[in-house]
Image (tube, rainbow, N blue to C red):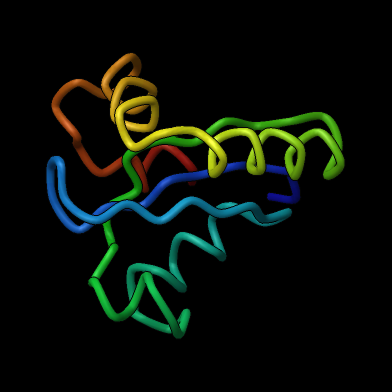
Length: 95
């Protein structure tokens, strides 16, 4: 599945949140779940896909990622909870 996507991974409800962008959501989600992405997400075990948004172009996805990263933690939490109030792992919805 090649589709520009902005996503957020968390280690638990209201825990550490990692925001990223990719052109291949299933592959990137697998990499996060398996700890293959070095840095923040592996250090804090952000393995739960709690939010994602598909975009028409990579430019749109990157613009949205920057908007989210520039926002407050409260805004990120509200965005997650608006579509995933139980903070369930959305990985299976990608495949």
